[in-house]
Amino acid sequence: MLPSTGEFRSRGVLAFVVLTLDGALELDGITVRATRTGEPRVVLPYRASRTGTKHPFVRVLDAQLKERIVATVLDAYAALEGGRAA
Image (tube, rainbow, N blue to C red; front, side, top):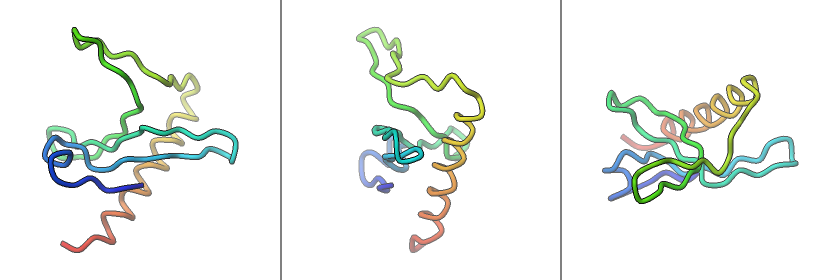
């Protein structure tokens, strides 16, 4: 996990994530973004069309797996933020 800085952070991107699942699958392009209330939210990679339609690169169809991914990323982000100087 790599914390964002500068313009990315001012746009609500808090961190960039590469996640390896069970040593068998690597997901790159995951971001942790701030919601309007400032809470961290996990966003899986997508591309946006010229009209703004989002086209996901990855769809997690299993609810338990999605919860595991989100929890893993948010736990790592919390540890990262906990270790940063205020």
